[in-house]
Amino acid sequence: MDQTNITMKERKLLNLIREIGFGEVKVFIADGQPVRVEEIKKSVKL
Image (tube, rainbow, N blue to C red):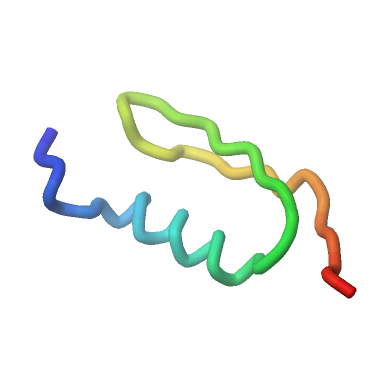
């Protein structure tokens, strides 16, 4: 796998992480690619 290109699934994962801001996620990987993300909990910084 070429390490210089970001796949669409990786791009979606990065965008999701940026949108969440704070919290915890579990990422499921298959064949070296993210296939599913579960948001476990959110926390708000006071």
